Structures are given as C-alpha cells and as structure tokens.
Length: 420
Image (cartoon, rainbow, N blue to C red; front, side, top):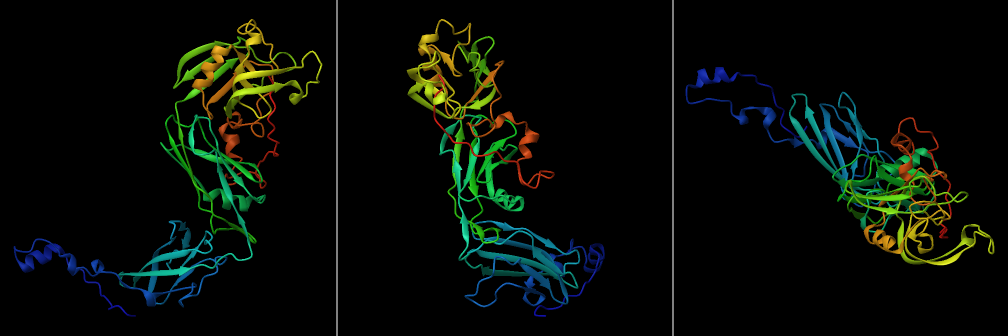
C-alpha cells in the first residue's frame, strides 16, 4: 500500500498532563493518527469505469466500486457536471458499492470515494470519467406549460411528451426527473393524464405570490430499451393573489373572493334545463375581449328555437367545449333570478367588464348547486382540482399501490366552440 501504516496508540489526556507538567493542558490533534490528512486510496479500490484517456463508459451498465484487501469503502458520491447525483448502495461490510439509478449518456461524472484501512485511517480517491452518447436511439423531449408569466392559484403545471410512455417503470424514470420547486415549498405530485401528458398540482391551491420553477433532469437518462431522455427548456411562473369566483346556480349569484375576502357579488344567469352549467372547480384558460358565439358549434341545429349567432364581449373561457363567463345584455332581466343560458355564466356588460379586468388565467372559477354534470378532471380544460388528493396521488407512477398501468384519461380534442 502507498500510505504509511498507522498504529493505534491510546493515551489518556490526564496522564499526559501529569507526565508533561502543568504547561500541557490538552491532547494535540497532531498526536492522533485518525486526524491526519487522508491518504491516496488508489490501491485500495477498483472500479468498472474506463481508466484510459479518451475511453467512455457505457451508461447502460451500473457503476461499481470494489474494495481491495486491507481496506473498506465508507462512502461514495457520484455526480455529473449538471449537478445530478447517482444513487447507490454500499455493502454493510464496505466491500462494494454499486449505483442503483441509471447513469446519463454523454455526461461527465466525478466520483468521490472514502475508505479506511485496518487501523481506521481515512483514505480518499476522486475518479472522473465520461459516458458515451446514445447513438441510434430515440430521445424523449418534454415541453412544460403554461408559458412563463403570472397565473392564479389554480394553475396546474403540464408536461407534454413527444413520445408515448406506457410502461409504469418507464413512467417512474420520467417522473423522477421532472422537478417542480416552489417558494414557499408545498406538497405536490404529478398525474399521468395520458401516455404523453402529465399534470402537476399541489395538495391545495398554490400559495398566493409563490414562485414556481420547473425543470427536467431527463437529458441523457435511459428510460427504456432504445429510449433516452432529451434536453428540455426550464419554466418559471409566478402566482398572483388568491382569486376564487364562486357561482351559486340556485341563488343566481357570483361571489368574487380575493385572498379570502369577499370583494364583489354579481347577479348572474347559468344554464337552463337541458343546458345546465357544469358543477365543480374550473380554472380560467384565457380571456377574449370579443367572441362570436354560434349554437351550431355546440350541436344546436340552425333554425331551432335554441339557435343563436351573437357577438359576445368580455369573455372569460373556463372549458375548451365553450363554457365562458361573459357579458349577456340580452338576459339582464333574468340575471339574479333565473337560469336561461346555454351553459355559460352570463352577467351585465358592466359587471362582465369588471370581472374580465380582475381575473387572470389560472384563477379559480367554481360552480355549485347546478343540476349539470360534474366538471371533467381532464380533456376539457383544467378540472384537476375535482379529484381529491388521494385519488390524485394514485395517478403518479411513484405512488406505492398505484396500478401497474398508471391511471390516464384519453386525449380529448381541444375544440374551441362557444356555448353562450
């Protein structure tokens, strides 16, 4: 071995004080062999990575470090140049360490190994190597949404994949690499909406004025046979005030809350029999100053008694199938007393303008006491909040007890008709 063997010497401090006199009051650190600078442990370990310059490791193979005679491994950290750590498992006797998470392809790794000899003296060795490129293999690209900006407390994070991932084990690899960090921190989870789409939401709404950052650690990571993660653009959004608009279809009133305080109450009309407004929590998708609404876009035959073709102003969309909160000057006489719309929430032009000016994408719009169907969790906007937390967590590929095929919903066409 290259280092000088050290022998253990046990001498009590009190004994040293008596022997050396009153001028010595403590043990010096230099007298302790365990406090010495760690020696080079190169001859105490071996690893299965490349040792020749210019050679690259196969990222499909786990990293393995083995202790040679006369020493044992006490700790190993492996990290690539982007800051991603490799998880691993160390044998109880210190004889072997091996990686338990996949290495990234086309990456540079630094591995720090700590050892000790038979006398307990510490050794150190730093290893460095590169992994090969995933040539001839497919790359999975992830696109995060929404676009950067400020949103309401109900805004989910979306991850759109450019290739389908169906196997639960492969989904777990993808999901572990998708990171969502917020200030303040909250408990949250991904849900596999489909083979190519995930949504992330907290257990409760985002805190007001939070900052949310999203990024992927998937680049170069092996997902499955011939499928590797590709690069992705990170996302940062901010959350505004906590805004919730609650429409009571039975009392025909919309109550507007800001940060828990009621700031406005507006008389409205919602869907009449046969066109009842959906119950449940929705999230504002977009705002449009002007929309032309036609009954034919929601299946109403032209020329029927329910047919319409009207210009609509101050339209706040909450479903892709055409449900809005908007100005409805033709129904002012019924607002606050009766439901006469084809599914939208209508109000006077002045009230709609106020609502339009005080609402943003991501804000929460909730309908209660309607005879309509429940809001769909997926496919027709963001109905994510209509799943309770336990049900939501079952949509994660990382949840113990989740089915082998993670829950998903079929992709629905995002049509843009208007219900009126």
